Image 1: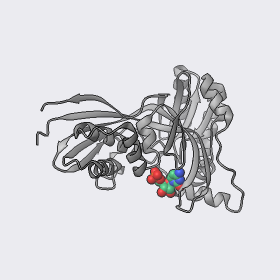
Image 2: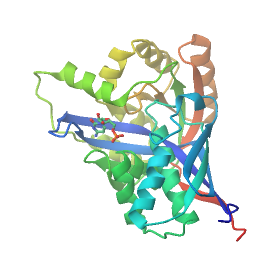
Image 3: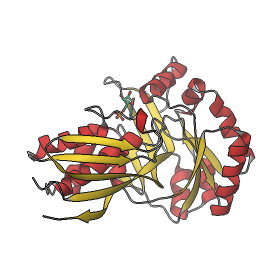
Length: 307
Ligand code: C5P
């Protein structure tokens, strides 16, 4: 085996501009209607041919990422090998910038990157549709990490329709000290809603209209997340983070997915810098990221073929 061919895949974080959640289904999942939005916070996955399938993670939270068979990039590579009969292995290295357990699809992003990288490296040449299907087997958010842009997700979130969205939006993301477990947040949501009628999830029409017209003020007002009360209950400090960001002039604020990252929409790059300073000065987050969206999904940005 040559071991010298290498491919670099860049994959974005996602935030959920809207997340409407049903009652639990018999299989334990929840039907959702969600608007995914890919933003310019990236993990980079480098892959080269090897005998086995392995991953190593570098970056500030690398110690919180499983390195073995539980790693979603490893699961993606194993699934692709099983599905295609590819006999090669892969050695992957992930430079993490997407927060771990932050509600921004950090693990799912690496799975999507691994699918793209291995498909190239092993020359399995799957269609986009086949890759999306494999992605859905790994996790609800993995297909969107492949697709990127802005898209409506239904089912568990894995059925995607690209959304018409005009222009570029500016974001400030407040990161929390700790992560939140997605199943725990869904379970807390169920607990809080026990005994109450839960409406069928439906994305507000105002949100789709705001995206179509590129209207940041209207988008900020339409952002919503059914999991937010549950995330705040499990991490009460998030209420203060939301309050400070809105008080400092954000056009809208929403916890992303199951949290705890909070996405603030602002009007410009300058406003993003001002809000970052405000959030940092108030001491309501571990760190802040500034980003724009939408951006493309997982894609190979560089490949060297030496054999
Ligand atoms: O699909 P994924 O493996 O990312 O989901 C992780 C967990 O989040 C699931 O096991 C489930 O508890 C919860 N979940 C859910 N409904 C969804 C997506 C995720 O209940 N639509």
